[in-house]
Amino acid sequence: MSSSFSYPDFSNVVVLDNGGGLIKAGLGGERNPSTVLPNCLLRPISSKKWITPPPATTNPNSDPLDLTSAAVRRPLDRGYLINPDLQRDIWAHLFTTLLRVTPSHSSLLLTEPLFTLPSIQRATDEIVFEDFNFKSLYVADSPSLAHLYEASRSGPTGRLVSKAQCSLVVDCGFSFTHAAPVFQNFTLNYAVKRIDLGGKALTNYLKELVSYRAVNVMDETFLIDDVKENLCFVSLDVPRDLHIARKTGRDNLYRCTYVLPDGVTHTKGFVKDPEQAKRYLSVTHGDTPQLEANKKEMDQIEVTERSENRKREVDFSKNEFDLTNERFLVPEMLFRPADLGMNQAGLAECIVRAINACHPHLHPVLYESIILTGGCTLFPRFAERLERELRPLVADDYQVNITTQEDPILGVWRGGSLLASSPDFEAMCVTKAEYEELGSARCRRRFFH
Amino acid sequence: MDDDNSNPFRRMSSRTRKVAPRMAAALASSDNRTHAALARLEALENDNAGIEQIEINEDSDASLDDDDQGYMQKRQSKGTKRKTRQAKALENARKAPRTFLELLNEASLESLPPHVPSYLKAAVGPPSSTSRRHFCTVCGYAASYTCVKCGMRFCSGRCQNIHNDTRCLKFVA
Image 1 (cartoon, rainbow over the protein chains, first blue to last red):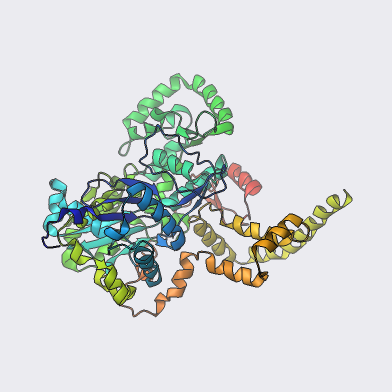
Image 2: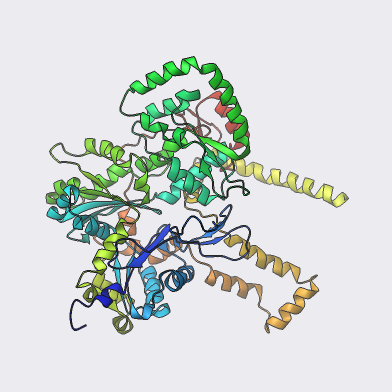
């Protein structure tokens, strides 16, 4: 450690964004994580053993694992580590076979959700230092990393963030949604607001709807995840969209068929007609001329459509199901959790409350740089809807500017990779010696959260 | 054969007798509906984990030991001391991962001074407007009617019939 530019040191930092849904892991300094894998153990119905899932980045040519009705065990519950043993198994697999690092010669940059309970922090430290013997550990929270990444990017959007040195990070992930103001790379934790809804709840909600209305898919987590990712979108005008979704035949721009796997020719479900699935894009603002055009067209071919429709419904009872209003009512829950019976405010209000809890001088700059990160922000039109809901709640003289990340799932990891390659990273870490000397609680104070 | 026929019948009849007063209580109080709503929200965080299966296995082990000779031998050769049921239960409880809510209760965040940010204080809180949109639980469209028995919403007579046939009182009873 004589010179501050010893590259081998930097490349030995393992950056691990330990999400409730996906683990993003790789070496510090790289642009993309080398491994993205589901943070769970699986037991397909064909086997009796729990196995680690294949990384999401494997080439599609390799034999895909049949995940039909697979049981899932996750080490994280509601975003927090509850099963350290399970996490240790998954990490062991990750470090030895996927990343191929020797923990005793590497540092670890680990993300941890905000407000992690002390007992969980202790358990995490135990895994990192006692089971894996990492040289040193840095614990970061995801909003500050997402901010760091956006601030580092040059360009019209990145410039503003870096000038003000603060932003509001909306992290809409697998387990929950946080609106967190970040000021000079520190998350202002007194102002963070959380909605207890994330991708997992949305998937389960969709599961419930499909199971009640069409086919029982209560055990098909991965299948419904795929349905959600491919077919769900955020509505810009719910009453109008409900009206459209109710129509029959070609007039219904939202109806879409998803084919279930049959276990013989294909083990993964797929969207029957991708063109049909994209038709919602033709609905734009307010009254739509396209709709009228469609109506005329519809009149001409109504008779043939009807018979076709009937055919479709016969098929539907076998191995496919139709989605209409579910496609937008599911992501809708993020904006109005009250509709689900949850006593929590929606995303727009959550952002306003988080910002109001900050110093008034920060309000205009925070509204100007809202960063969306996390997998749920991938729903089409998410940012557009959020801006529409947010604008009426914000004072007129404040500008509202919402930045979407190009890859919201990896944004936090990339921030971590940047931090890990900064020259003073090693100085910020807690080393194993310090941990052994001072214990978990004392070391944790260094991370200011 | 005779047993097979009479048993389920008897069980069923006793069950309906048991359920009826509970159902009446459920109908009387609105509290059960909030319980049901909370349970439903809780279910949104569920995994389809097979954790229960492990427990079932161990239960069946315990009941098997009278008649399965092979199993008895295996067990005696393996374990020197016979574990009592209580010890087993304790061990299971220790091994079983606790849910986040249990850990949260243990951490007793309520006792922190009011200026310390914590998990509980970070919750966004109730919405400013109390209005709630209602969607039909059967078809998903705007629902203007409420089931008098269970409080779920539906939009039309057709959906009401489906609701009554399929899941009315499912959560409350």
